[in-house]
Length: 221
Image (cartoon, rainbow, N blue to C red):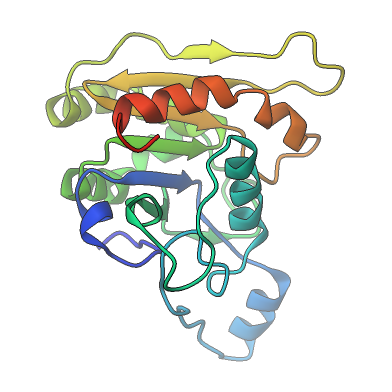
């Protein structure tokens, strides 16, 4: 079973919003614990925006971006509603590495090769929206070897992903992409730990991101 970090709710088990990173981080502390024979244990699960669990820089920056989009999510246990329970967090790969190049370099070809787990999860949960964090993920999703299986699951591909850039921005620029397969909306954002990426830059794409979520969930976003 492909690992999901967040708690299972009826809202995210079918037709939810999948938040998908590359793989699971592996800190220096994790490495030392492994050498000492200490097994890592999963923490308690809750909804994605519950700040009492799953405390990571990755999650916290994504919440900051969502706030900048006007998508304020409840952060306290017991205050969650339908929107909070729609989100579920996973990674394309079940592996743990310090970075995408610390072991075998992770790129589009390796993501396609090791896509069985995440494809099984997609078939099980059939999300209406998928938000990728890392440019290679949407490229792997569109690889010709996977396309037929994904179109049979979600519907016809809308064409090449639409690329959004903020040309007037004075700083390092990154691509934001949107696309659809049938009624399922894809959003591709830079990875939260990308060097030189500013929160201001990501916030600029609020209209494109909220429009995609609105197409997936007309009554909620």
